Length: 335
Image (tube, rainbow, N blue to C red; front, side):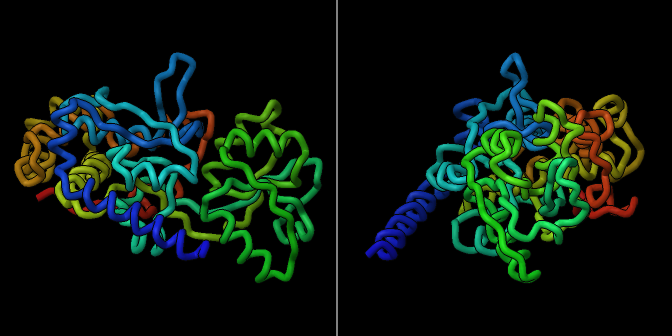
């Protein structure tokens, strides 16, 4: 009976999603004058509200880029903080227009939740963080450990696979939010935290003594993180997808928030197409990409100020460097 009830609930959710997606989200966004964006409940560097209540982060910049493209104004975004367990239902039901919240692209999520991933804005992998006092240098030394994890994430499944594969046991200590997870770790309720490495770096700076914890070298999974929309609305899917792609293309072409205005007159055809054309193919004004780059910046600028060496997280580009610089960030051409 429980399984049947769950199936009915899922069918109902997908039906709502189908009805919502049959509407034109871009027209709805233009009509109401803002983009409703689902973000985390607070993850520094990715989506986090500052002391004044302003949201900032790599994921937040995707929301701002979409607003710049669709409405010409990066500030026309309203944010909905969501836990990992809440995020997909909020998108399926139409409560939000886009989910941009450190969410891993998987087959199950792509194929059975009525969702479309619009790209990857951060290539990540799951890791482990322990206190230095534990004296551990490898995750393989953690047999029998208590592990703090966040509910409703791919972390739980990856953790089970890793420990089973290596013949080890562990005890899960589960929390609903990242804040609760780091507090549990700091209070000594677990020996370590397991999550995406990006999240571990973000959580570490929330500790009273960040230097007391260390991220171990093991990376046990692939975690491509990116923005998500509902299936069935290809026009909106394209707007979100190409808003992210415009930021990556701009970095490759050397177009920044500082030189965007002068680059509108560039003799480089690729820059000309990016900065002043192709909008009609997306149902947007021709300044759509110019608005993104001038107001939000290119992908490299966003990475650097939010999670890179100019930020408290100080994460190297690594896999998130451009393809031409040894990374995986690669965008189809605007033409």
